[in-house]
Image 1: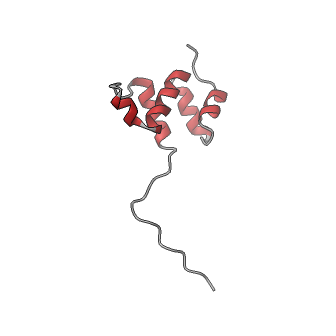
Image 2: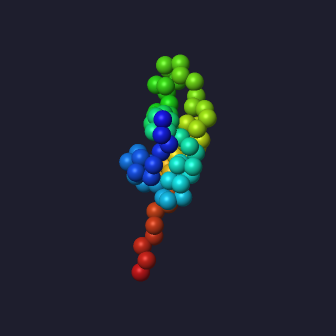
Length: 85
């Protein structure tokens, strides 16, 4: 199976910067491995319930790279911004 192209990555991960796209391509992963990584990031519970092993190899590397793109969720809400004037 062929390695990912820039177009493949952009179709799958539209909000990635050039460095992240390059890291994904450099992993040597296939489109199937990218889809697997995205499935794990989207919702790992159904995959675990199916008894599937955790992502390994290139798919695991992609999970790590793609997880950096997700916004960090804070447990505490941001303080309100005081009006200036």
